[in-house]
Image 1 (tube, helix red, strand yellow):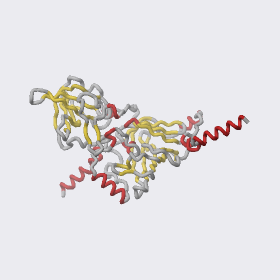
Image 2 (tube, chains in turn blue, cyan):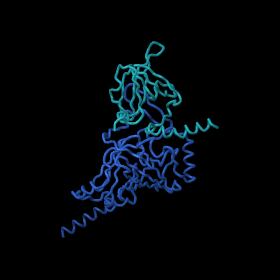
Image 3 (tube, chains in turn cyan, yellow):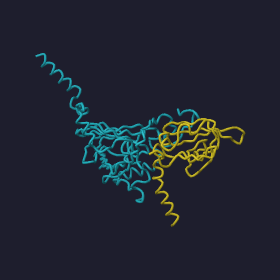
Length: 257
Length: 130
């Protein structure tokens, strides 16, 4: 009787705090076993520090990359945003760019492979992405975040990551805001032992007439470590609410306020 | 026609050139088509994110000195290209070519520099470490 009361009580408590939603946010994880770690060791070796190659990648010779194909409404919006002449975006104020821009920074990133998860430690703005490879589905109604919510699966030697749920503060590219329909698919694979290709496809029927695919090439740097990047340490750049960019030269020779 | 073609090629190349440098902020406050050489004595070198800042005392024509600030790439970026926090030392003389501020403030963004002993300093290029 006492036992039954307690179960009823727990059930009531779970219902009160929204049990199913909470369970969806934090699925219970079993402790990884030696077999789980052995399985990680059989995956392609993504470990270590990688940096995008600029100037020598697929863009060379082909001219500037074709931009995303915008719906007429999105094209008009971009034109209006450009006409409003914002001189900079919020990264000048140290807001991180979020996805997909955070993957294109001139700073390295480190890949960590552990059972059920791929973690990307991004030096720029000290950011971290978590790609869950434990078989969980994407959440139905995720909170909106700078990197979205990501799950991944291995298709042979390719890690395929799917991400949804992005903050409205991120952009597909400059002056192209996304809608809540944006979905990003990334295909990570080694094209040789020290070279990684990341093919990124952004789909957003609210803004794009077709999915937008671009490819980055990264080189592994075996001697590098990820350095600290605290943007607020001494940031003198800013863009104000009117879109005017500037430099704070107060306290010259001191630290930025 | 030929000139227009060249200009469009240059414009097409600009985003590619600017991409690595423009990650944190635009260059809107700087006169990117102007260059100015600032020669002075280092009073402070901020080895900080998101940008390094070189602070100089520069003699002016009134017999005094002006304080100049020069924004450079981040320590993270520079450390992989041969720089360290001691590359510039307080009291050292240095000559820096900058894109100056549009508003005439005593500041600019680093293009290239030469130390007192004639050593050139660059902030861009491929990483020097494998």
